[in-house]
Image 1 (tube, rainbow, N blue to C red):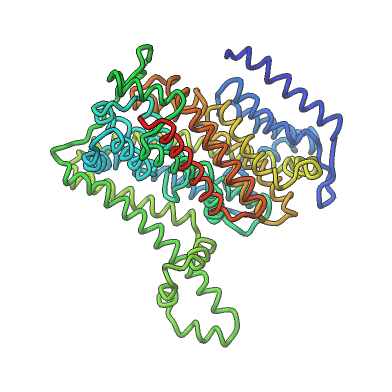
Image 2: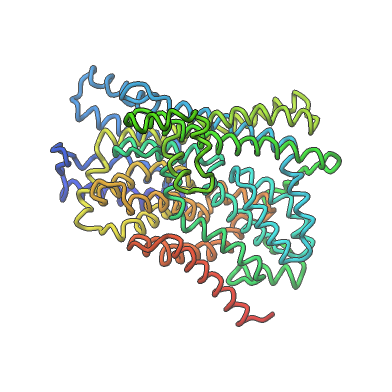
Length: 583
C-alpha cells in the first residue's frame, strides 16, 4: 500500500477521532481539580498516524513530541518566555528530570552503550558461534534439527538481532541437509528471537524496557522502579511465553498445519527447501571458527558468566544492604540485634532460594546502576577474552566495538523519543483524560485484552515493537492505573505485559518489521513467504494468550494456571494433528 493510500485511510480516522473528542469530551476534571483538555491525546495520535503512513519512527515520534511542546506552550500562553521555559522543561524531562538531578536516564544510556558493544565483541570473537557449533552436532534428523534450532534460539537470549544472526546462518546448512524448509527455519528463528530477548532480564532489551517502566512509574507516582515492574509483569507475558512453548512443542511433534505444512511437505517430498518463486534476499553464512573452537568458546562463556554474576550478585548485595542500613534506624532493640552483625553477614544470611528475599532485593537495589556497572565490566572482560582466547587483533577489537556502538543509535534514539512522548503526555495530562472518558465505558476486566489488541495493531502497522512500546506505555499504563482506583493493581501489572507482548506479536505478523525481514534474510527465505507461513502460527498463539491468559488473569486467575491451560491447548492441538494425519 502506497503512502497516499495509507494517508487517505489514516488521516480521516485521525480527524474523526479529534472531532469526536472535541465535540463529546472537550475537557474533563482531573482528581486534583485541574481542567484537562481533549487535545492532550493529539501527540500519541500523531505518532501512531504518521508511523502507519510513513513507517518512519523517528520522524513520527519527533513530530509528536514537537506537537506536545507546542500544545504545552499554548496552555501557558503564547509568549517568548513561556516558549523557552517549555523547551527547557522538555529538555530536562528527557535528561536529568525536572525534580532535582536524576541520573537514571544516564545509567540507562550507559547500559545500552556497553551492553551492545560487549555483545558485538563476543560475537566477533567467535565465542557464541563456537558454542552453537558444538550444539549443532546433536541434530540427527528433521525433528531433532528443528528442536535443536529452537533450543539455540531460546538459549541465545542476549538480543533479537544477535540471536537471528547467529542461529539462522549456523543451522541453515543442517536444516537443508535434513530437508527442513527455509520457511520453517525462518519461523523458528523469528519466534525465538524477540520473545526470548523481551523476557530475559539480561539482554539488549532490558535497559529499554526498564527505562520506559521507570518513566511511567514516576509519572503515576509509584514507589516501584522499572526493574521491579519488569519482574512483576513477567508472569503475565502470555504471548511470549506461549510462543516459546508453541515452538518447542511444534518442533518436537514434527507436525505442521496451514501454509507451513505445505512448505514442509514440499521440502520433504521434493528436496526443495525453498519455493520455486522464492526471492531470497541474502545468503549470510556464520563464521564458526573450527580451528580455535575449543578456546573461542571461553570468549563468550567468561564475559556472559561475569555479566550474570555481577547483576545477580549486585542486586542481591545492594538490595539487602539498603535493608540493613534502614534496619539500623528502626528502634533500639532491633538496632542492637542488626548492628551485632556486619553488613556482609546480614546480606548473606538471607536464603538465596527465597523468592521473597529476591523480590525485596530487586525492589530495594539501585537496579539500573547495577546493570550499567555490570555491562561496563563485562565489556572490558570481553575485550580481554577476545584477545587471549580468540587471538583477535586490536584493529579487529576496535572494529567490533565500533559496530556495537553504531548499533546503539537505534535503541538510544527510540529511548529518547519515548521519554519525549512521556514528557508530552505528562505535561498535557493525556492519561487522566483518556482514563476519565473510558472509566465508565471500558471495564478493567477487558482493558488488558484491549491494550494487547491495540499494541498488536500498532506494531503490525508500524513494523516496530520498540516504537509501539514507546507510544503506548506512557498512555495506556496511566489509564490502567486509574482504572485500578489509583493503585498498583492487577490491571496495571497485566497491562505492562500486554503492551510488550502485543508489540512483539504485531511485529511477528508485520511484513515491514525489521526483525521479520532479518529472520528471513539470515535463513535465506523469501520474506513474504516467511510472513505468510508464520502468521497462522502467531495468530494461534495470540488467540490462546487472550483466551487462556489475559482475560482469565484480569478475572483473578493466577497467571501460572493460564500458562498451564495454554500449554495444554497447544499440546492438544498438535496431538490432534498427529491423530488426524498419522503420516
